[in-house]
Length: 280
Image (cartoon, rainbow, N blue to C red):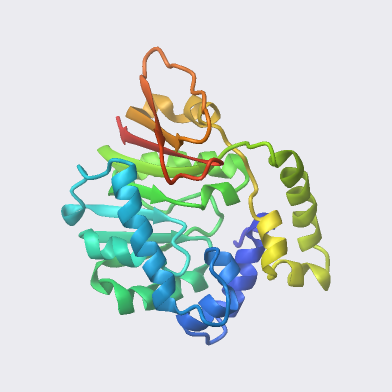
């Protein structure tokens, strides 16, 4: 049964377009606001995938992931979209499972990987309800998610973190990106609540759920700080690291049984932080 949560509506609208006989190139041009900040009629699928290739290289370095044996690993990507970063992962990993809330995106993800990655290494997973991964325990060696968990309702985001831990083998690695509070959220969060309500209004709602300016207001459905997340999941983890921007101070409460290392890092958005940890 398809979820009807308001924060999924932009993906449903874009997915409808993606399912309407559009190529992956067409999807990028028609719905560029969904996938990254680069928009315009001149944006091509190749340019779109190039941004993902560069970010995979960047985060492997910034988040100290060089020790992961990607070439012999199965990696789960939560929130693959049409494959912006997925292609790069298939070029690195033995196997990749791309998971997304919209099945049309997953079709285009396969198309993207077929052009720019290794389609023989790709499986896809439809996250029908936005919070449950239909995978067995200890299925993957690493789980990665970037700019996805911020678009979920808070409890759904926490549940996806628990699911990531469940499906990642003992000793495997989770690499998860979150958005936390900044001063501008005093205005942005109430605006987001109002915009998501408008998305449900007939006639105007479907339009608002497709336009870039309105979706950027409404699609960020939660703010989760490290303490909130780690209070729920730290017992299942070890070697816990929290990466954050050097431009802000991010306080993480010490856990007497689970040491947590905080690492200020360049080239991370001040409103973002990353959880990198091994599954116990």
